[in-house]
Image (cartoon, rainbow, N blue to C red; front, side, top):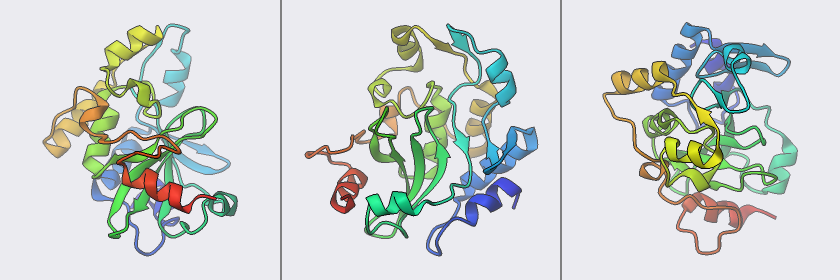
Length: 218
């Protein structure tokens, strides 16, 4: 178990675990050195972060989807806002520059899924991102700028880039690893993975996490 894996594992309650595909991802990240030490601890990326920043212009950047994997210091303030969820939700990644995050969640059947929690000040996406860890990796491999913006989910990355007038070069190394390691394919759009891209307060959402979060918020 490498340091990134270990640090995230140590934040999880007894019923939760780091899925094997994510354990393999953390090994891949550590192997390639896509890590940075911060005052909060080790952070893992899908692309060398300094190269990404140095080549970032007003019109384009390399690196595919930006996401930061880290051990979230679980804040009591967060759980006080959402009473009753402390042992069923654990953040493990930052999905957007606005502060949006991805988390492990135990549903009502105690099955672990990967969910999204928008920052509220930017993204308001609150839904199950993926039923399985492999599908989560396939979602990341599609190549959007960030996965916190559900307005892009019905578009290909290229359509999204054209609309937003900003191009993100694909992370071919990561894409090839996902396809070969898990004998799978990369979807065309996020809607092939994300069944119900709900937002906070959606009264008629079919997404189980959004409904659960709404019941427990206060």
